[in-house]
Image (cartoon, rainbow over the protein chains, first blue to last red):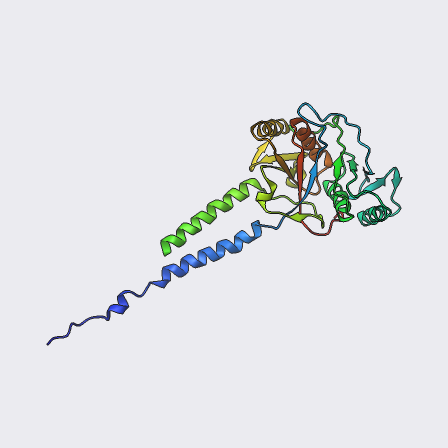
Length: 155
Length: 131
């Protein structure tokens, strides 16, 4: 009786891992680079008044609970913060948040309108910081006053 | 298995490209109260990216929709078209933190004119003081 010579059959079915390792490495590098794209972003929601509509940006009369105005501060990234026609002694958004918390604790309606207005040249970060201070203080109904006459140099 | 893995790789590459085309690289403002949300929770969103052109040596602002540069007038036309096509549009504004507010305000005014009531501001959920 003769025996067949050759490799054991199990050797034929062993997977070739060399190419698979390459692919896995490519995927790993892809995900490592891709992670930097998916920066966790948050959002601050806002809603325009329901009175506005097509052809709108209507001039609506709003009686806000709190009115915040931001004015440019020359040669500074910050801004002057005016709340209900009074300038904050300490010009910071932490002070604004503290004042809003005081108002809430004094019984201000948390669903009351907060109206934020800003000069055209104020940095966007300052407007978001003002909004952030309102949300942190428990006021969620934030609205913005916009000036339809502002000219901008795009186009 | 290698074929399947390759298919997955191509799928993820294409998907990432779609995400990139909607969200360009913007130096978002910081806001500690910003909530992390899933994209599906934003509903029918219309993402507007506003870049500070001064960062690239220009002046003014650059408006981008799906990674394509557009003028303010063009942007507002698209916003109007989106509003006509869908009952409720959520306008997501992603703007550079150092950008003068007037460029964002112009978009908000456009939203008001188009009848878009929901506006969402993208921010990084970190400390909210001015930089």
